[in-house]
Image 1 (cartoon, rainbow, N blue to C red):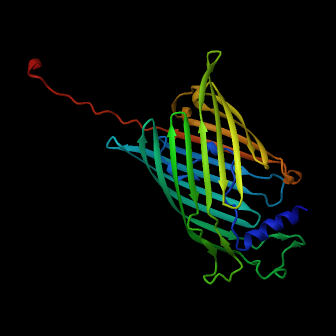
Image 2 (image 1 turned 90 degrees about the horizontal axis):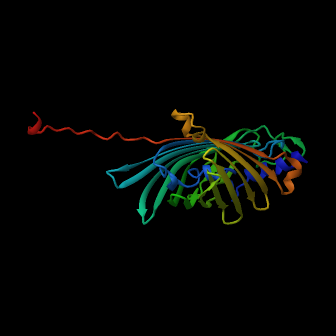
Length: 327
């Protein structure tokens, strides 16, 4: 049965189609740049985030995804805040491999008590499919379907995305779209190749709030958030709440509607007060348990996250002058 299911996934990937194709993550509250370029530079620091995810563990050919995002923001001449970011996403599922590199640029404008930013991302997207894969009958020998490649195939296309993002000290909300140009990936210019793959346009909405109080003299934060992904055909909704204690540890849970329940936990090294660069590190872990029919065929999904942010402090110029009173 496992071979049959992975064969279905692979065949759907080979034919030209339009469906949700972007990788799935659980710790979306730490992964805003990858889907919304307007987030770049929001913290006015240099930030780096690494996420590694193994989805549907125990399932043959299960999705495995690695992501690295970097961004930096600064204010120019005291009034123009700009940001830039880079995202690299490597994704593998069965015989499919994809690599997405995106450069984000954003401009931030203060509006009343918050900041509104707009961003654009330009990048490349590479999709390839290997010749070593299985069908429901076992190993593929190249005779079952002429549209299925019996040798490695792949291609690289231009990628485009846009977004808007509004944030204040304790809240944020964003809207964005990736793969706006809906590139057709084909290793044959005439599109008669066995690899013809349309990259579907995706739409995202996100938001979150941070409520801070005290508990027995200790700082306690409640951080609800939501994350919506859609390709205008199907929609996926994540609802999350994290609880952070004393600027040190957080635990939380997420519900992905009709798909999975997740447990999250993490450590903010700032609460450990180790000093130096260690205070800029956050480490998180998430586990998804499927509640859909797929739960029978996998052992859940595991996701690891590490985040580092460093704020550059500009040294103030010391000006001296002499007075004739003190010669």
